[in-house]
Length: 474
Image (tube, rainbow, N blue to C red; front, side, top):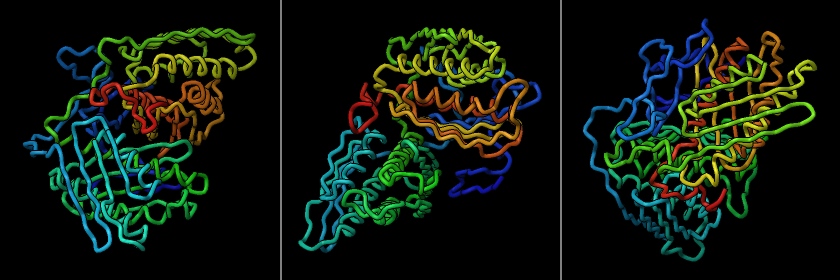
C-alpha cells in the first residue's frame, strides 16, 4: 500500500499515510485488544489525548441536553478584536472591485463580477462560510481580460479578509467538502505569512465560459492580500471528477475552513447547538419483505445509546459504533434469511436506517450539513467525510486483506454504506489511510462515519433556520 502525507502549515492531508500520528486521545467502544484514537473537529478545535479510557469524555454545557458537545481545548490567549464589517476597494488600471464582508449575517450574498461562474462560486463562500458578502466590479475598461477581473476580485476578497484582523493569530483550521464524486480538502493558517499550495488538477479547460486555469491565480491573489496560508488538495482522481464539482467543492471547503478559523479567534462566535429549540428529531421505520423484517427507531438528539439486534455480531458492532460516535439513539431489530447468507439482512438493515435518518432530518434546515473525522483504531486509520445534501453518493477506498472476519463477508461493508447513502440522501466518502487488520478497519470506518455524522446533524443558530445551500433547498 502506497504511503504519502501531504502537510502544510502544521495540518496534514493524508492519503494512505503511515501510522497514526500522536494526537489527543478520546476513547470509544472498541475491541478489547485495540485502543482507539479519535481525531475530530467541532468548530475546528481538535480533541486532546489523556490516555486510554473506556468511556467517552464530554463537557455538558449549562442548560444543554446530555447529548452535548465534547470537551474542547481552547488556547488561553486573549482573543483579538475582530472587525464585524469590512469594506474594501481594490483598483487596477482597468478594473475596480468593491467588497463588503460581514460576520454577523446568515450568508447573504450579492456578486456581480461579469463572470457568472465566478459569481456562483462567491455565492458558495458566503453561504457555506456564513458570511454576508457583496462583490461588485464597479469599473471594467473595454478590452479588459477575464483574468484581470478574476485576479482583482480575488485580491479584493483577500483584502476584506485581512480587514477582519485575523492574521497573525497563529490559528489553523481545515475542512473537507465532498460534491458527489469529488472530495476537496482545504487547510488555513492565520500566522500572517502568505503562502498557497494548490494541489488541484481540473480535467477540462472551461466550465461554461469560465477558464478553469483562473482558479489558481484567484486563490493566489486572495492569499497574498489576506496574509494567510492556504493548502488546497484534491483527494479523488481528477479523471473521475466533474470540473464544476472540483471547483465548487473547493470553494465550499475554503469557506467552511475560513469560518472555523474565524470562530476560533472571535470572542462573539456562538457555540453550536446539538438540538434545535425543543424540536424532537425522531423517526421510526418498519420494512418487511419476503426476505427480511426490519424495524428502526432513531433520535438524532439522543445519548449515543444503541440497542441493535441483527443476528450478525459484526454488523451490530458497526451500527453501535456509529450511534455512539454520532450521539444518535438507535434501536434496530432485524430478522432475515441468514440461513442463506447475510446479504439481504445487511442490505435491508442499511436501507431502513437510511430511510429513518432521512425522515428524522426533515428539510435539513439550520444544520451544519457537512462533517468529517479521522479515526485511529489499533493500526487502522480511516477518514470519513459526508454531506447531508440529499444527493446520494458513496466513495469507498478501503482494502480489506481478509475475505471474512469470523463469518462476516467483508464485501458487505461497502454495500452497507452504499445502501445507507442511497436511502438517506447522503454523500459519503470513506478513505483508508493506514492499516492491515480487517476488523480494525471496519470498526474504525464506523467510528469515523459516526463522528462525521455528529458534526453534520448539529444545528448552528447563526443559520437562523436557513438551509446551508446557495439554492435554498436540498
